[in-house]
Length: 78
Image (cartoon, rainbow, N blue to C red; front, side, top):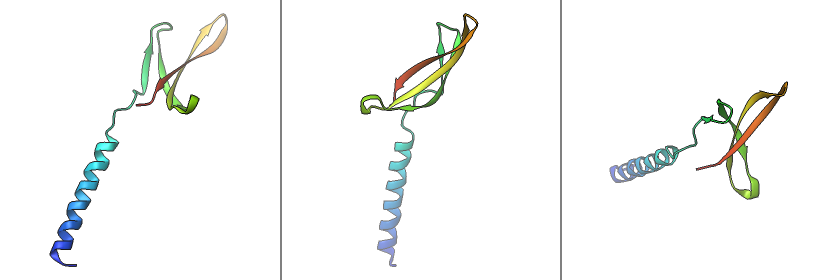
């Protein structure tokens, strides 16, 4: 490999690495969200695709009328 090919390969590698790292740093929904209604933390627990659109699923459990219930919330993926 000559010096020009090596230089071009190094530049291409740096550009691709920078592009991938910028893609990886895309904002995400937080891992936990506060529920004012139950004074509890929602915890991110999965992903759903209603109507083909990505939504992060948050849940927390709470006690009401001698039963443990689950409160579920979805937030659209960024």
